[in-house]
Length: 127
Image 1 (cartoon, rainbow, N blue to C red):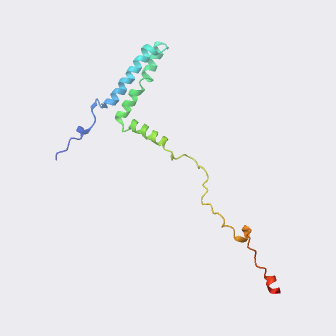
Image 2: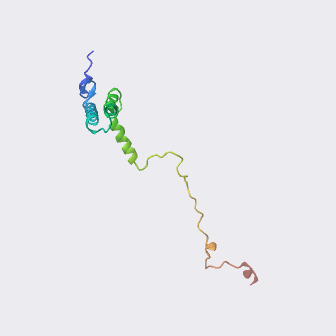
Image 3: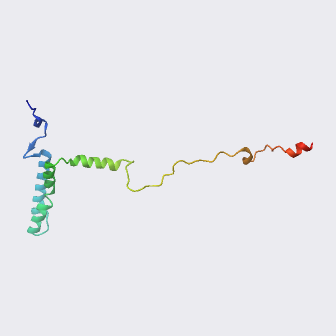
């Protein structure tokens, strides 16, 4: 049996990270370097701690995304579309539905005050 090469259709990976994930790692490393040496107003120990743990979050996100099947762009794009949809579901009971409104039948001629006088039966028998 000759198994086809499925890896030829995969994205380019270097050490199990895609190019976008490497860009996030380099962004985190550059942010940590800039924060630690140029921007931080704290002492060197606090600057080193915050540079490694706070500015290294994009790299951590890239590493987590490398081992899982989570697509951040798809998630944020779907959340944005859901948020912009006018008919989205809001939790809770919501307003009470009115249902069907049954209107009363239209008034008869007698109720409307018709100009036609009703027949006086008493007067007919007397004549």
